[in-house]
Image 1 (cartoon, rainbow, N blue to C red):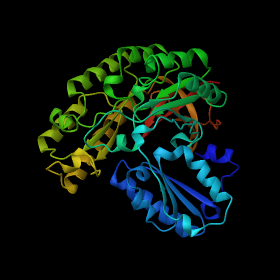
Image 2 (image 1 turned 30 degrees about the vertical axis):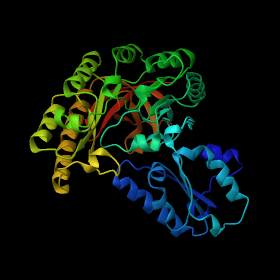
Image 3 (image 1 turned 120 degrees about the vertical axis):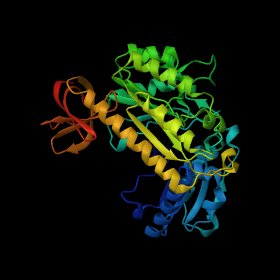
Length: 420
């Protein structure tokens, strides 16, 4: 969006309070995300009452009237009309602010969306060392708890030629590029010939000089043998498997409308671990789903404990209007859900600690980040561990070989072996 606005002659403001137009891109995956968006809108209006506020993104697509009613909001632009955003802001830049435009809503049928708005996001993970490149948007799944398909539309993919060109350009400035999508494993299914993600990765590796590609979240059944074997055999692919789990109880997975059962999930992760015992393994897990019993939660805890996860993203179920799960009986009390969240986070922390300790004495490939540490440069390993390179002040975006000497807290410490 920023690139499109710059192309219309606008410039980024140094501070929100000095801007003529404030664009707020919203999430709606949880009630907390909605609350954060409303707070951001109110803060922007409080700091700069004269600014035109344009609210877009998933919350804008889901509940435009709610957002249009907030003070200071000039436009609400759904994901269905994000491609029109530069034209709207162009209108604002050519006229004086007008009350007549307050609350204008542009939201249409997201399921008719065929456009693909994407450009590299070059501030991934809070630094400018590992850009995110979105290559797929939308989702054709219908999980009972998830509002995302109704606000992002059907699965659609950037063409292979577009991806290759963008990666080639990024590789001139960065050592690592992170490929992302709403349902990344479905890349290509909507394109002529229905190409697969593994084939795209081969083309990117063959046709660009990128030194490391990292895959973001991929659904468990999309971690095919072909994809796993490619990650194993290609040193330029980060050894990092993130597969959403959501629950370790088959009964809960059925109520969630997930397409796999625990045996399917375990088979994929265990095969990946046999092939890559030094890889990072992560998952998204939800606690407090409607009807989740003590035994179902315990099944989840045991299932997670038995797999080689190195980290987890643990979420507490949040009611999303319009979803099937919102009407299910047996909503779990908030204190119970919070306690289950705490238990899984502590389990994940312990598994992560053991994994970091297992790296001591090994050599890992590290991309340096724009972060500081009292003892040296900070980097991220191919297997998704924060590494402090002792005694070194190394610029960001360098690719190093680092020998791990110790594990301290949530990082490992190491010494540089080689620098490029």
